[in-house]
Amino acid sequence: MAEYTDREHFIPIRVTDLIDLLCTESGPLGGQKLNQDDQARFRRFARSVTLYLHALYHTEFCQLKDDYAAFDPDADPPPLAPLSDTDRTAHLDRLFGTFVHIMERANYTRMPRDEIKRVMQGASDWGVDMSVSWDVFDRFEFFYRGKGVSRRFRRSWRKWFKKEEVVVPTFRRVAVILKQRPHRRLGPDADTKNVFLKLFKDIPQMDIEMLFPGTRVKMPFLDRLKLGGSVTSSVGYVGWKLGTSSLTLSGLSGALLAGSTGALLTLYSPIALVLGYGYKTWYSFQVSKQTYSLQLTQSLYYQNLDNNGGVIYRLLDDAEEQEVRETLLAYFYLWRYAADRGWTAADLDDYVELDLEKRLNMKVDFEIADALRKLERAGIAEVSDGRYRAVPLEVAQDRLDALWNHHSRPGVPAGSGYRMKV
Image: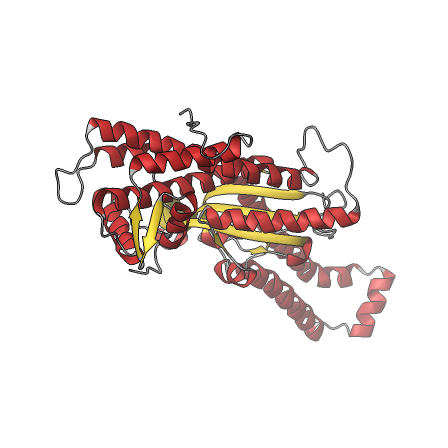
């Protein structure tokens, strides 16, 4: 069983497309395509798997929705009775715990704070660096799925301001769940009572701090150097003028108090220099800051996929579809190609990964342990001496019907003969 450190568990293919592929593919030896009868039976089985897993996820979705209701800033309608402080803490703990669990099942990677700090060190390709205050968060979790690249364009003085293409490493999907606490960076009107959920796409890795509240744009080092240099040189110029002037320091002070025009002219140039260069540097930084804020707003308008309650719907759907893909792939390859002798977990894992890479150029790390666990729990695969075998398709269909009875018709006995309508 191959183990990959550069691959993800996520299988990037729609369930409908996967079913079509499995029904029409010819198998590793060719000529193993399902006949029309088998195609119809497998499609029915696939729909049963989808409905069965959907029933399981519906229960989890209702629980997560109830936990989030007290913390949803967009709740409409809001809960009738507010929670006590003790109940709020318990719901908050359960909300974050369940969310982390769902993200793992949707094949997102949880990024700890130390790694976040390492990734966002330094300025981005656009020369913008941001300061993050972690004290603004009461609770915070960051997840990503998929790494890729995007191409952007910039103009650099090194190339005479000609437009050049820059390859930027990105996270294909980013999800954030956070609760704020009172902090001066957030201002007096910050919402510190609710929990915010955010989902984004194609976020540059070095710029993930732009997704956090309470961040500030740092003044670039060159601008700080220019501002400090102008002040230092101006102070030095004042000292030089005093050293070469016929006025002593005490005499200059007296002249200034007396309103002497000569004394004022002596200090006019350095004062104007300090104010001029200082204002120019500060104004340039403010323009850059406003330009970046505008670019950020325009960019996130297209990169924001969902917020708050909508994130829960979308992520649970992602997790559910992933479970369906894993279940269908594991059962299909055992049913069609493992024969009576069966396969070990390593055999099945390697076969699925190699076949997906060969046919669809998808390099995935198939989550074999989880897939087999679902087959065994549903009773549609059996294991003996470390070798797995799929039960016949008709038997698997009957067992799924019995599970559907258990979830959708609690009063119907498991062996009543009721068949799922699909």
